[in-house]
Every structure is written in C-alpha cells, then in structure tokens.
Length: 113
Length: 113
View 1 (cartoon, each protein chain N blue to C red):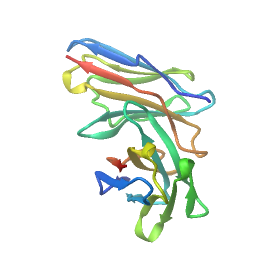
View 2 (view 1 turned 90 degrees about the horizontal axis):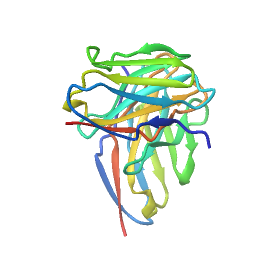
View 3 (view 1 turned 180 degrees about the horizontal axis):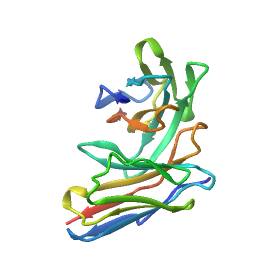
View 4 (view 1 turned 60 degrees about the horizontal axis):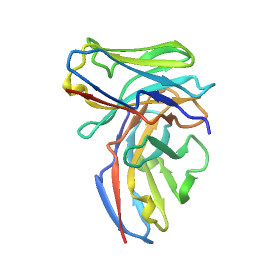
C-alpha cells in the first residue's frame, strides 16, 4: 500500500530550539496538508499545497512557523523558535484532489520542554 | 466559511448493537464529505467519502453514511459494532471551490462487552 511517510516519529526539544518535521507524500499526489492535533483544539489545518504551491497557510502562527515543498517528494514544517504550547501531534496528509480523501501519515509527536 | 459539528463527544454502545454517529456541516456549495477513524497513537484512516451521486455511500469495515442536503448532515452508521470499532471518529468537509479539508472535533466510540 502507498503511504505518507513522516519523520521523525517523536521529537523532544527544548524551548527556543528549531524543529523541522518532514513528510514524503504519496507519489503522484498533488495536494499536501499539514494538520496539528491537540486534545483541546482537535485537528487544526495549518497549511496546504497544491502542485507544490502554497494555497493557504492562515492556520499557522506566521512569526514562528513555516511550511515549504522544495520538491514533489518532500514537504517540511519548521518551527523556530519552538515553545511549549507547540507540543502536539503534527500530521501530514496527501491527496490527488478530486479523486478521494487524503491519506494521513503516522504523525510526528512533538514535545517542547 | 466551512465548518463541521460533531455533537457527541463520547458514544457508548454494546457490542453487536447498531451505531449512528452524527455530523452536521456548513458549506456554501456541494460539499465533499468524509469520515475518518483514528485508533490511539495512529494516524487517520479514511472510512468513506461522498463527492456526488448516490447519497448513501458504503465504506470499509461495514460502515455506511447518508448525505442529507436538506439537513446538512452526513451521519455514519453501522448495523452491528465489534469491539475493534472502539476508536475516535472524525467527520470532515471539503469542496472543489475551497479545496481545504476541515475536520470536526471527533466522537470517541466506546464498546461495552
């Protein structure tokens, strides 16, 4: 089965450090989403891309978060500097838009201490 | 703006009993609708989707959902639940016009033996 690959699976970091999360979408998918999941807020859409172009990143704190797709096989989400309130599970998902729902990766569990 | 409401945070049913999880959405055009399931520590798995056509859609694991435009609802059903169905269920809405996929807060399903 084709799958979305996220790395790292778990990340513990100190407040103020830079964190980079990576996602390899399914080959041929043209849409990539980044979501953050917390108990309080549920699943929040942070940003998404179509054909590597950012379509909407209004869900991200702009001063510290950035999302990019340097090529079709890699999406990155960066937090600099990280804060304890960023602790959450971050999911990447990909889709070929219009043909079905998106496929989720296993997530990156981020803990900022 | 699009939104999804799942009015039940927790649902408890006995094994073998029928199940209905509620979902109401807000979207200005014909929506794309989805149900996902998440087991603890896992990513989200697509159960079923509605894009157009028959308003009763069949999914994996014996689930089905019915799109009712007049009620802005997309409720998930299963005639007989199994202990392995215990998980969190998310309803989501997207659309060709807006292209985002927005999730509800989820319903956690508990199964009594």
